[in-house]
Image 1 (cartoon, one colour):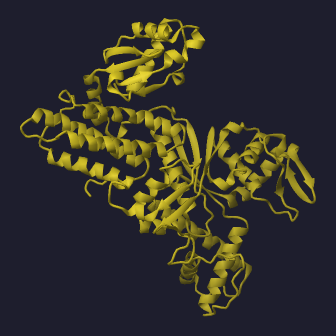
Image 2 (cartoon, helix red, strand yellow):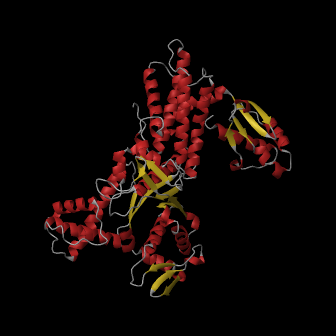
Image 3 (cartoon, one colour):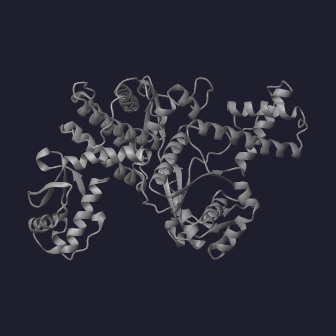
Length: 544
């Protein structure tokens, strides 16, 4: 029995069918019982259906119990006003061990998504400097969402939208040109643009360019400026991609705003939206209030330049034209006003607003020695993702950054993240995995008994129930785009593993049969814990 809760839902649906009642799976809630006397699992479905069926919950419960007969269930009891308590046979729970060991890294995978295509765009930081803490949280959450969707059978495309056109790239080129003169002419007083980028990365990129071309563009020609734009953007993007790979984040597609503009896709959008366009004060407006936006939006300024919204609309249309039924954008929480204007624009272009979903990700605050701090002592700029990973660890940053809902602010305490003790959830989970690996190494000469027939202790049963929850937790975390649910599961599993380890001697040379069953249980736990850590991009060390 791979998924106990799912199995019980099916039994309940079949029982209702025999009563000529149709009930949807989503309307059935199965929960683990908190007390041993109430069985292993319970449901309140009889009470939920009382009004619909115009019958007393206790009678509905009795009717269901009479119709449910399954070899995996030891007994069923009715409690209180109509709760149904299921007592699962120990051997049915134990059979999960063999299932997990046989499926290995595929345990928890499903075909829920039926290979439907999904596009997830995340990070999409301007190629003008280092990735900061907000980008890091967006990277961690976006990457986990992709991993979760892949595990439940969706065909996921990971996309990064490169804002390589517009003022920010001009400012980057101006900054590089200024540093170019300062370095080559040994002139620190060469004027630096007021809205330029002062970061160390621009200085390093300029040195790379000098190594490539020398003093070729000291004359400040238009050709030189265009070169600084192209080469500077390319080098910044290379660095961003390298930092993201270090953070265990990869992308399938990098889409260029510049190419969107060059390929005439902006003009296509203007044509599609022509019935919703009007002129006012020399600017061009989009009548988004015809849909769900709270005010109309400027798409072309009075000087003829585009606002960011127009090429963004073209980019989203481009994604939909590539055959994605659903596009998901992971954006900073400051983009909350963006949602309705983009959905309105897509409706103008003939698309359903349901084809776009936006995940807003709240900000991160950094703490050290009990105080908030924002600036790096080394660079004098905002702390970068790379610096934070070097200060603590990639594992710690990834774990903590997804450990709360994206809609919640996150406080990251560097001192707590570095602690090598059980109060640090990353350390606690990884230590549990390393302990399991040590047990497996110690018992490697004892053959595994995957049947679990010798497991009778309550802590063993409790641990098996946690393992049984994993497939459901994966689906739940994926469809709700909530990676934090996996960190919650990881802690629950690690606690259960440690309780089992404390109460049950795993390797006992005087009782090889029991040792064989318990080692197999440890192997199943090791597989599930490693899989869960992998879903959130955290390593599972074999020793610590």
